[in-house]
Image 1: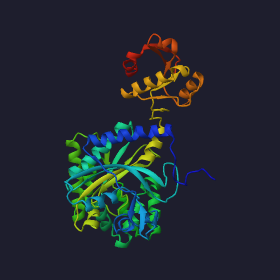
Image 2: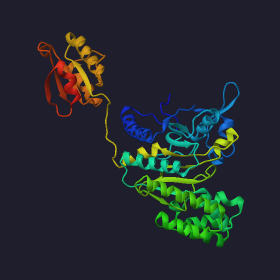
Image 3: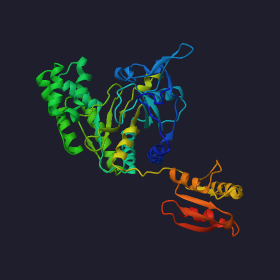
Length: 432
């Protein structure tokens, strides 16, 4: 038998899981600080839901795991956490709005496997359903910035743009309707392939040279949000979509200022993202050069309407946990901890094993994580085991010490030992 996991999936041993939990716990803490409530959805969805037109897009559907169950029903594994949210909202019409939820769960996509890119991977999403106000988008961005600050990122940037202004740009540049999506996919690659690369892709798609010049001139606009919006407003002054998109971005920036959000955001006119269901502001988080996107999202006011029959506004963002963890490991931003246990209780021989078990349970009952040996091994083997799994302290229970109602507490890193009265043990361990 081959004992490898399926390609694109991974097993996580305790040491790796502890690192992952550090990240997930911090993200969850910030989500809940901002008032988002936990949600869990089924990993398996009806194919009718996953393949709904306008929900995921052709590219994602090609990567979606789908099959027939034993009853012959076509089903699939969820490829993101947004479509299940839309289904849940549509099937629970009594939910109080706005509905603010967070979800940290696995999704599956049969795509190329690379560093930080798996076929089974963890996502963390926050979404606000039921508010058209740009304050909801501003809160998503504020929460996002707080997450990366909490994780210890120093260099990161939230890029902002708007689906409506992108539509207006396409009309301004004279792009035919049937070429809008592929044109914007090329525009979105500006960071990866540069201006010359974008130009070549557009030429290969037979976009007219005058249209290419208009597009490249537009997406090169840089400056403060106010400066970018001013130039954008002038170029798109005759476009209804353009005016609406710019107005939304102005409101968004205004709310971020009112909330005193750290200025780790900019308006980037080349940002397009997956455009299948976005209807307004879109956002993406990039870390240091060479790392790429580590979070992304936007406003999707029509997706829930695909299932409900009437539109409900929504906005949200998804965090790429696998890529975030890879970056944090490379930058040594995570503290390596081998074990979540604080104490290993060691019995010096069989005569004191019963007492060692009593002490272990006493510590656990007082909320101190403790373990003990279930194999009745010798003292040296117990200490070796505690060291191998990274438990920082051992409590050594011996007959001599018990006669004076004491135990020895050993620091496994330094080897130093301290005699402690059993009645004071909980207090002592709580302070180290």
